[in-house]
Amino acid sequence: MTSPLRLGVNIDHVATVREARGGAYPDPLRAAQLAEAAGADGITAHLREDRRHISDADIDGLMAGLSLPLNLEMAATDEMQAIALRHRPHAVCIVPEKREEKTTEGGLDVAQDENRLAHFIAPLRDAGCRVSIFVAADPRQIEAAHRIGAAVVELHTGSYCDAHAEGRTADRDAELIRLREMAAMADALGLEVHAGHGLTYDTVAPVAALPQIVELNIGHFLVGEAIFRGLPEAIAEMRRRMDAARA
Image (tube, rainbow, N blue to C red; front, side, top):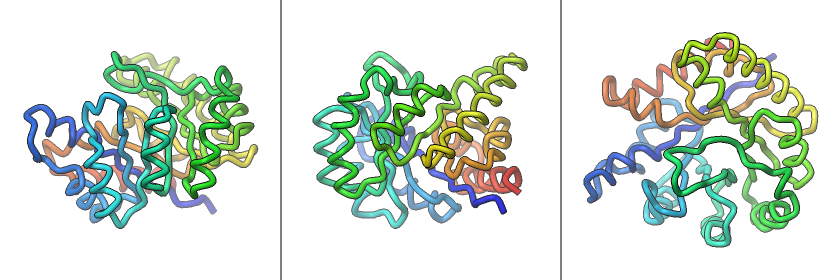
């Protein structure tokens, strides 16, 4: 029987809307609580070095006020490691980060930075955090993530979603094959497999159907869709589509 598929809701862009005006509204913690009621299995928040959306106070509030597990996305810096060790969230996902990017543009190059990353994640793992590495669907990166002792790889689905949005059918299908093959490879190595970035109602089903993937992390689309139908219904619809694809 195929394992259940978890939905992690990323609430970063609730904070983006707040930061457009400053102040305290809308509150990411309230969004996280609504997400839980709507069927989310976890909450993801990316504390960026430049604090462009999620703030340190948001992480304090989420750790204190959440019932769901928190997945803290962060760059591999000393500052972020110290924050994660202070809070000890359920999960820590290491992502690449560039100041000039609008959003995370790809996976972490673990193979090029293997020794440093192995030492970076060891204290997080020892503190009880489930360490995830955000990578492209590339065998070199998956093998490197396994060697450094990560528990999880999260496969970057952005190239697949971009190809779909731009009508590049052959590229979309090739990216989906790559995701399928790399999910199977990671699972065979004993890694837990997650996926995310850019997923929408139109693109989620083929990824949700991959049996080795146990968690999808989705945020920007859900926050955007919430403008039109409300956050609980936006999440509930994603949950329905994921479950239908899994079945």
